[in-house]
Image (tube, rainbow, N blue to C red; front, side, top):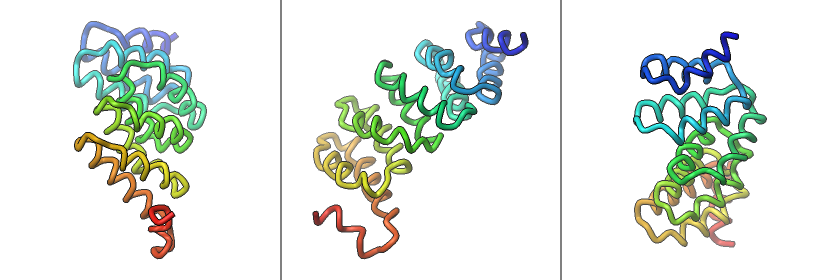
Amino acid sequence: GARATVKANVTATDAGVRRAAIAAVGELEDASAVPLLTKALAAATDADDRREIASALASLRGGPATDKALIAVLASTELGVQSRLIAVLGARGAKTARGAILELAANPDVTVGKAAFRALASLALPGDLPELIRLSIACENEAVKVPADLAVLATAMKIGAAGERADAVLA
């Protein structure tokens, strides 16, 4: 059918056809398209294609089921794809990805670490603050330390009572 044709064109040689197909998959599909799009992301050599695929992954329907599918492929993908998938999960507001992303925040790869902390700035909950602080203190690379500190700050600001925001630091 038409959907199968669209999915087949995700790898078309013509950039216009390929990007249109990627965008269509992002608008029309759900968790079932995660393997197709993550494979395309891993194979993409063009920056515009990578952006389009990440946008399509972030737009996929299916809510929690799609988030779960993305989390499932997160740990088994190469570092370059991992950092992009982390950003996708952040863009999707996938709170269920917090645990997996917290684990990846300690990754020695700078790109993965930065992506993890950037996503955690929006995804982390106040209960994650002690672990975020621990990870931030352990950061040795300045390029990762800045997003780590910002994630701590953003998460602390989610605590409603201003007087309780330092509790995780003081504990």
